[in-house]
Amino acid sequence: MDLTNAPIVIQPPVVALDLGKKRVGVAISDKLLISITRLRALTRTNWKQLLTDVDDLVRHYDAQTVVIGLPLQMNGSDGDAALEARKVALKFARSLNVPVYLQDERLSSVEAEQNLRLQGYKREQVSAHVDSEAAAVILGDFLGSDQDRTLVSRT
Image (cartoon, rainbow, N blue to C red; front, side, top):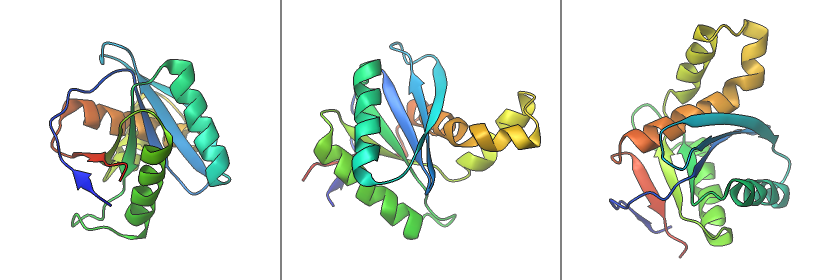
């Protein structure tokens, strides 16, 4: 997979995905890249349905960029989850008509749980929202710095 780090101007709105085995968290930026909104998590069943669901989101929100969380290990290396995220990102890059980026997401789920608790969610409510809150954290990191973003090449 050919990955290139490139300082490119990001075209909004941006959809962010936090890939999970059962659910995919989703968040979107506004057109000015100022605010981030959590959306309902997608149920992950198979590749075809996931592609359809994400393509529908891209079209509905007129998203110009997709960001996928890259779950690197704490030492920065790829584990099984990161390798899977890279494969999915490459499939999206080949299937969608928008640029697809990977964003380091280490500790995003921990931060997401903390954010939700600070917002007043009870422990049993956190699990229903944590995936999309993690996507919002990933999107915030993506928009805040270009150091950990990687453009996924279609080739």
